[in-house]
Length: 137
Image (cartoon, rainbow, N blue to C red; front, side):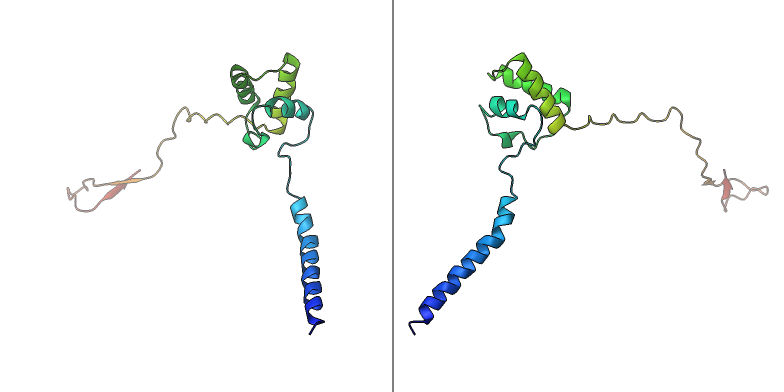
């Protein structure tokens, strides 16, 4: 009976170790840093995360102009950066977290093609009877 307790403990320990080994690679794949690598990332991390976490903007997608507007909004809220840092931040965000501008809606065609579908209307027959329709294109 004394041998069963150590065997049960050894089996539990082995199961725990195996579970940790199997779960390890899955957990290691979760990114600690939501920002993609690229030129200017270090400036973004230093300047932008001084006030808020990178996860607040890392998943946003904007055009270059929209990112510039966001940068200006942050500056008016008190974000401090040099002109060089502003250029680096703007370039990084536009490239790493950018999106294409929304496509402009297509204008309608200048003229509509004539309706080629025939319409049914009741037209008098030669004898004056209006009871059956005659198709007119």
